[in-house]
Length: 171
Image 1 (tube, helix red, strand yellow):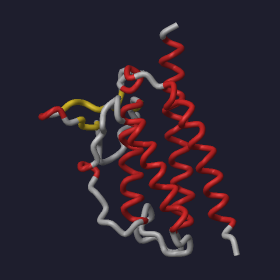
Image 2 (cartoon, one colour):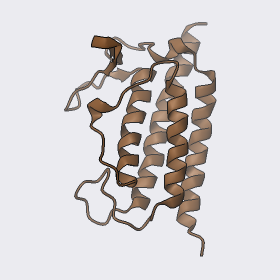
Image 3 (spheres, helix red, strand yellow):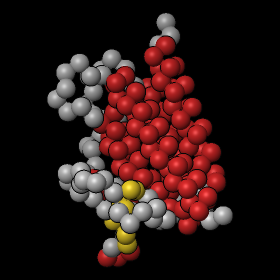
């Protein structure tokens, strides 16, 4: 018997991904590190040329406006950790998640999207989830998949809005 939850989750994901692809195809390298506000979170080259994200362990007030670079790193971080949990791998630490730079960000995210489709097609949706609800009872992989769709849609909307604002500011 088909699992309609999986079909619904996949349809939601596909819709979100189509919106993301619209923006990824139009992204220019300069879009990634454009700082839209004075109070901004971005990525900065650290020792050895590695990109390091701005970060605070508790959310600052006011919350800094992220750059597209920061958002694409952020997506890579939470998606990597989600895939690690879902696939039974040891979750990577936030500091281990590297941003590949302007030239590699879109391809990295496209690859993660394909990894997620594979994971979603195979996962037991009824199995208790270990992420992102540590210790929460009653949460399953179906909840995690729905969270991925929601988090991705939020981040895709942020990326798209920043790209559009930068394009409009150049006119």
